[in-house]
Length: 374
Ligand SMILES: Cc1cc2nc3c(=O)[nH]c(=O)nc-3n(C[C@H](O)[C@H](O)[C@H](O)COP(=O)(O)OP(=O)(O)OC[C@H]3O[C@@H](n4cnc5c(N)ncnc54)[C@H](O)[C@@H]3O)c2cc1C
Image 1 (cartoon, rainbow, N blue to C red):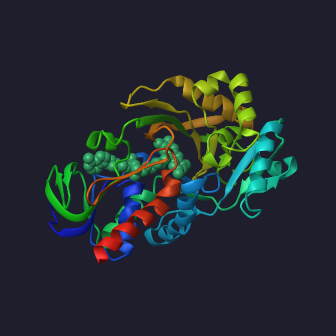
Image 2 (cartoon, protein in one colour):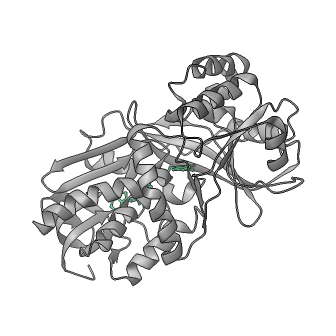
Image 3 (cartoon, rainbow, N blue to C red):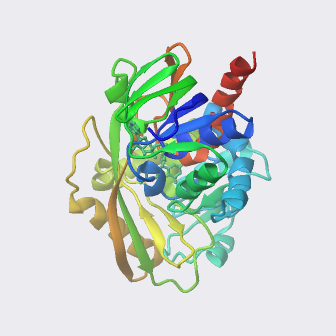
């Protein structure tokens, strides 16, 4: 092990959750190390849409998302990666989708949710579905370069003096100490941000936690003009917690189930994020298993391509396909625990880690810093 210091905080996992903890601890002047089993950032934190989907959250996730927003923008400047205050566009292709959006707008601040007429959404977003009924725009949401952000944050933290132990697996923990594949490391506090692999380290804590596997594409879509930012569809309205308790959401879910049983079986969420090179990230489907099943059916890709053609009326050239994986657990968005004194497990257990990690980590690190200072 290169550096053998006594750290205030050792973070296990160099995904966005671990890096956000390292960032907040470093800002507070703590001595920080990061231990990562791979030799770079390759987990969920580079496999995603790069969408900080702030407004569609509720409860604790909404608090973390709102608190994290300014940190994303600060980090984009300091660590030098692309992030944009792009907001989220959402197209309604049926009246029941517009009903959910109208109820959502009535519940939230006028500044946070802007309802759009059919003409307004068609004016901004190049969708070609004749059924388009209207839409909404969520201006506070952010877009982040998903492939660049986490690696850039790691590089910047390293240059700032955070010790990174790459290609080093954490194998066991006790208060004040981590046993790794390259020796021992001492730290007053430990944050374990290993995503779904928390089930390998603390199986009792991870009861019910599974790996959620997603079909993802990067494609060139022949559009008459570029997408102005991330685009949601009606499927998004039955996915995010902010829409969950609205009066019209159950009817929408029921209609989708009746009209689109194959898509519902794939747990489709049809959404898009445009990239700076003109390509678009297209996703996604969801399949949940304890073990990371390597095989991915072509059905998911076929549905994504068919639905994309239907929405935009355009030709598509697929550039990349991949299987993204994130943690999923029934009925909870976060697994936060302290299984040993000063050993903190922090896992985002649904697909909102880019949105919530900055605010979530600020919270954990505030608690840690209070004890380090005491
Ligand atoms: C396809 C897809 C699309 C998504 N889209 C979005 C989105 O648009 N917006 C959003 O908010 N969220 C999105 N998410 C979710 C988001 O990407 C995740 O919630 C987030 O990246 C999780 O971050 P993490 O740091 O916990 O995990 P990871 O990035 O997976 O990092 C965990 C790290 O821990 C390391 N590790 C594991 N075990 C050990 C060990 N024993 N020792 C050392 N290192 C270890 C791993 O190697 C890995 O690098 C998406 C996810 C996917 C897969």
